[in-house]
Picture 1 (spheres, rainbow, N blue to C red):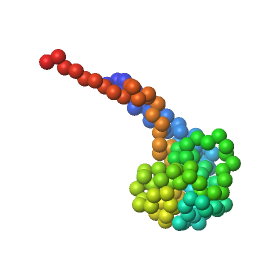
Picture 2: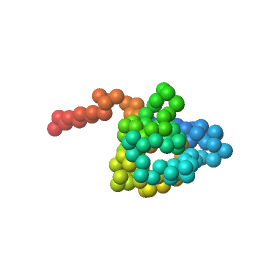
Picture 3: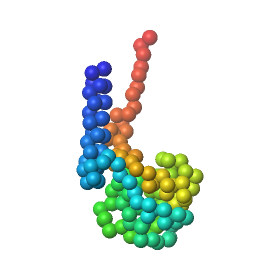
Picture 4: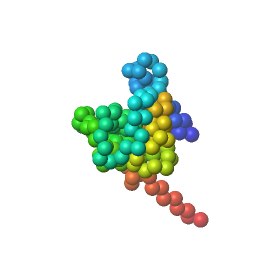
Length: 137
């Protein structure tokens, strides 16, 4: 019981620290908000280009939909990587337009939010997830 409480306390501290770290560069508030310029991308899909797409790619990378990309010079083209990231984002928030930036997705993108990623990488290797319980009765 004590170890569970310790784990929960540490987890809460880590989440709070991540939010505080993100907010420190954003006027001291605890929210990250994408700009309304994302609304210009309504109906965009693979192959189209727009000057706002690099900002969208940074946003999706920030919340771990795009993954960690070494190159920070994002292109202005809606490519297969951003299409996959948009599909992941839509699956998480459940709008019904896979891979295309519809109005529902764009309005969800511009909502204020904490800087904690939606997708958290599993720090525990798969082999430790299996628990085999046997009984001698």
